Length: 70
Image 1 (cartoon, helix red, strand yellow):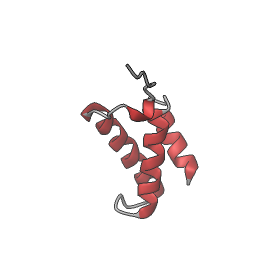
Image 2 (cartoon, rainbow, N blue to C red; image 1 turned 45 degrees about the vertical axis):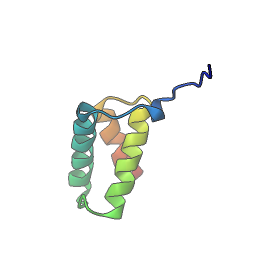
Image 3 (tube, rainbow, N blue to C red; image 1 turned 30 degrees about the vertical axis):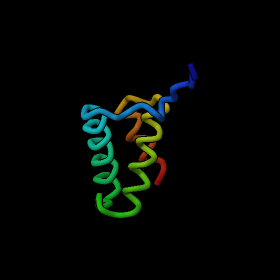
Image 4 (cartoon, helix red, strand yellow; image 1 turned 90 degrees about the vertical axis):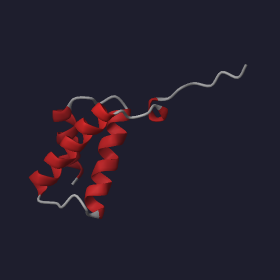
């Protein structure tokens, strides 16, 4: 039997995760005056998801890192 490691990036995001991430993205976009339907917001959203999958689960920390990305 082939045993391959499971990485956090491979785990699914559940509705609770998506709700948290969406709220963080809303906060960052509102704070910076960015519309959610822009390429910049997509980049920030991707960063927030990446950080979340790497273990940053605190919404305040995610928001701070998302704001610092700008």
